[in-house]
Length: 368
Image (cartoon, rainbow, N blue to C red):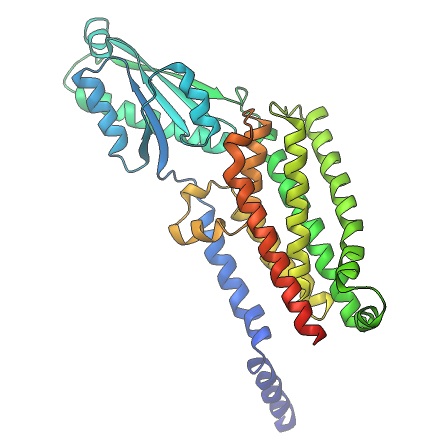
């Protein structure tokens, strides 16, 4: 028993002196708990809305103020005409537009009913439904509070219009996001594992000593994965269009150009990861934890980024899929062009350049 206890002490000693083991045992579970706890929420926060008050009476102004003071909505625009609606949605400036009919208060008092139109961006159907539900609840509560003494209180009829996805099909949401996740995993993870395998087997030193230049070695490793990633993207896109009937309203050529840029970025990230690891197992673990979970949870693929705490929103903005998914939805579902997506495109280009620069620096240090 004493020998067994001594053996146990030795094992505990080895575990506690290895930071990587401690990270796996304690760091990853805590990080996953915090991520899932804060990201997986059905609450609506800070939704950007536009209000079109065609009545401009006291009642419509009070209801508008009620919506904005609820803590769920922020006034982002006041459109002057219907022609502004789609451009506001395509640019991402608003997620909902609330339109009061003319003579809103007059109709409510005299006829016992009045109309409000709620237009929501349904390119994210789950988020759009939540936003409409919150809006409906606030309007109903306002009506009850205003006319609680009336035996037959008037009613406000809310006419809902879901823009870009009138049938609220989930495929419109997950196909653009799935393209981003699949490409990130194939391009980045496989590139990192492939280069790490060369280092683990000792063949990387042989390659570096060969007549090939380092840039030729890297290109030789990543070009096959770039071609395969392009094929995978086209297959997923074709299946989405043919099987799930997801449209590409915008420019198909622009969408393909953005996909190529994103694949290049993912490959650059895979190369960067490979410069920090020396084994396939480590490359797989880092790629899985750094790429897979954040790509799903912090990219806006499933959960709206605006609903997350500020700290997680900052982390989400560092995730390449977050910017690419927004590009996909804008081009595919909203028919947006380069005018709407150029900030996201610029972010992806800067990230690609940064990853390549750091990778080249790391390889130069390794060669010295």
